[in-house]
Amino acid sequence: MDSKNRRKILEKKKKIHDLIKRASSTLDPLSPFDSFRRYTKNDLSVYLESGRGDRLSSSLKQHIRKLLKKNMEGFYGSNWPLQAKVKRTEMTSPDARYIFVRELRYGSKAYETASKEGCDQIAGFVHYRFTLEEEVPVLYVYEIQLESRIQGKGLGEFMMQLIELIASKVRNKMSAIVLTVQTSNALAMTFYMSKLG
Image 1 (cartoon, one colour):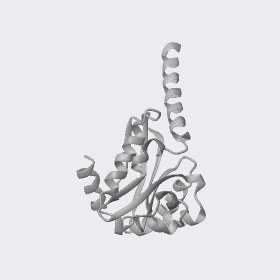
Image 2: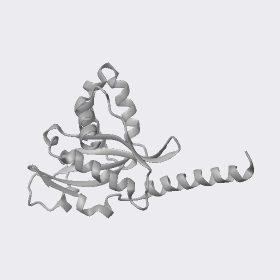
Image 3: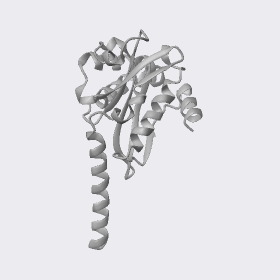
């Protein structure tokens, strides 16, 4: 390979690295999308807020682990203890980004106060990262987890639309959104295939 081609490849790699670094450094990825911070439909009222893996309180970590176990243990079966350990490491990484779903129990309650409530109000989350997959900058969705009582109310689709906005935002410009689904999780497979194409 000649030096000109090598330089082009290195410049492209640096550009991609800088893009991922810029996207990851955004303090509140939801700030450009204030209209998406609140979801009120189908007898559900929630507030969405951003978070980072390296800034999770111990009570929030515990709540996330409980929700993951409740929703995912059955799909992993006897492999769950190993998977739970992997997920604990992933969830607290400095690269981990979150959208937390805080349930507003009273429709008249100001959503600004929701973020001051304890994590007993958290009814779900999306865990994602900006990363490189096969030399392409992507937003990788690690988890989308919702309490069973708020599933089937359109919130998952709403959150994936928000993820699409975050990925395509001018500053981010990720080339794709990537996620992995357990093939044994028929409900999730149906959701992703029918709702998101």
